Amino acid sequence: MTAAPAAAGPAGLNLGQAIAQARALGLDRLDAQWLLGHLLQRPRSWLIAHDDAKLAADQAQGYAALCQRRADGEPLAYLVGESEFHGLALGVTPDVLIPRPDTETLVDWALALLTQDGQRAPRVLDLGTGSGAIALAVAYRHPSARVTATDISDAALTVARTNAERLGLTLDWRRGSWWQALPAHLEFDMVLSNPPYIAADDPHLPALRHEPLLALSPGGDGLGALRQIIAGAGAHLAPNAWLLLEHGWDQAEAVARMLQSAGLEQIATRPDIAGRLRCTSGRQRSAS
Ligand code: GLN
Image (cartoon, rainbow, N blue to C red; front, side):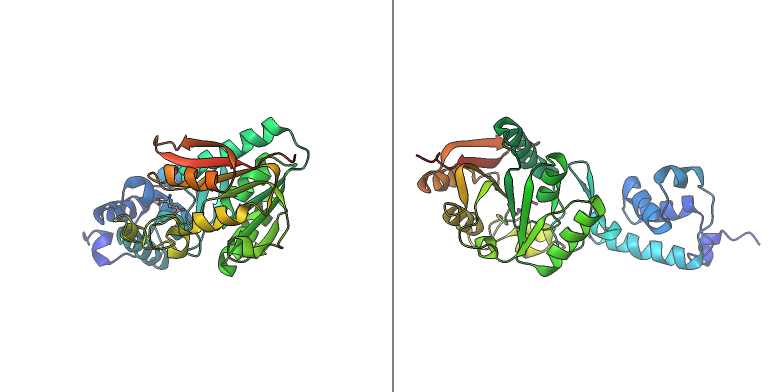
């Protein structure tokens, strides 16, 4: 019998052959290894050391199915159910946006301001938290902060709460659309948000079809959610409180103008890791 095991179907494949099949579907090596490691619950180093270990038939079938989904464009993070943000491992499902490294700019800026202000137990709010990425990174890195996080989606809040439990963090979770999630006069020392900001006709939107549209685009010119957040901020920003917003690469000027019209001061913009203007801040006046 000289037939190669692969000729008889997926059963009997060894790990090296399985990876080769994934590569033939167009997957890059790292994705192929991630998916196999996820399926077998083994680290990459183990896969590499056990190149000739055989897959059981159901494992081979499961792996082929995962690889096909990846080849069809499903993000790796959804297939393995996990993503990394600001050094934290976060669970993700298709109910939440996959956290982007660009958003670490917002978190780094927030952490620097919290340290600079030196306020004891600052009240921090993350509007539209999704997986909880921003809120959890701030809570983890600035343990004295009292962090509240909102989302309109129950499913997203479930993902975020589960992430908080895994990290041993306690946050105040609220469901609702932007400010409606909160009592009218609840004040914060810092408000953060990475709202949906992609314009309805943005040519990049179709490529993001696996992620929740609710988290990506408010429709129209893409500024609708940012407008709502800025319009309602006055009632919830304590004196000297910061409002830090992520936005599209071409929206910095519009956001700065809106912050100015809302009466905020110290308006500043920061680039993301690709050098695009990605976050803009404003500060509430001090109490006079
Ligand atoms: N930065 C994300 C992207 O361009 C979009 C996130 C968002 O709309 N808040 O893929």
